[in-house]
Length: 325
Image (cartoon, rainbow, N blue to C red; front, side):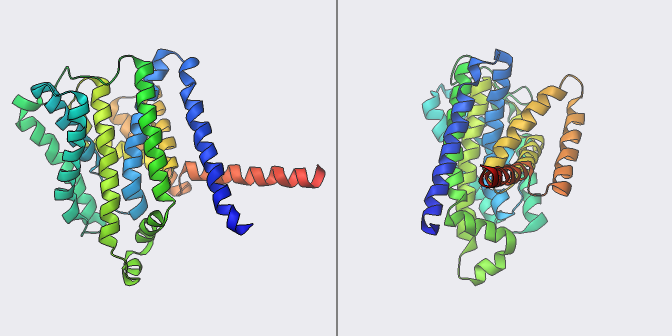
């Protein structure tokens, strides 16, 4: 039975993925257009939160630079589309490649740093990138950004299905990595990197591979973001976006992939609920406090806590059926 438990468990999890995907896919049949637009952003934030989680959530190298990665892809694709008229099926792949290349040039040296030094470097990247956009405003549009740029699809429902498809494909891929031997090593690096090195494993190679997955995912998220809105502004490069992504991953549960999806959805709907009542700076304060509360009282994240409660309830139901059925 033990030999079968692994495949059986994976089949159950895949079944849950299918159920979850189908449940989300039928939502437009019951919701109005306004809610569907919010769900589009939830899908986008989920993609960005997963991009952060596969690297920072797994290795423990906390990054505030994922808005830099998403913003690099967003601006590259927008510039190519706006100034050169390249179609999206050309500009988006080129933008993702540019994100990988620039990320390797800037992040790879930083991977040799640890703790607050690495975090500080990633934080500065976003700050510098925003200033770069403002300096070259004749090309980037400065604070106003660029508009109009081409959109992937027309209408809330079409964009929902496009972003949902990307989100689910990315989620399955990253979840597979997270639950594989590679994911186990990445989580071991977060716990005791020196011990992993002493075991004969090159931690730099593992971190670099995780970063490439992270940058690739962030690049997709950045491209989808601007080509859904039809415009690009420095907001996609801002530190606020990085903080939002980080808090979403913390709320859902770092190092889980599924958790950041849940966190992204919770954060987006909370953002929309608070928008009429609380200014932008106040919302970021509330999100920050929420993130700290989760870390203090639910350190593994709400998603992990919810999963544990479901497992406990399931065992209790099975025990009741066994005893009284």
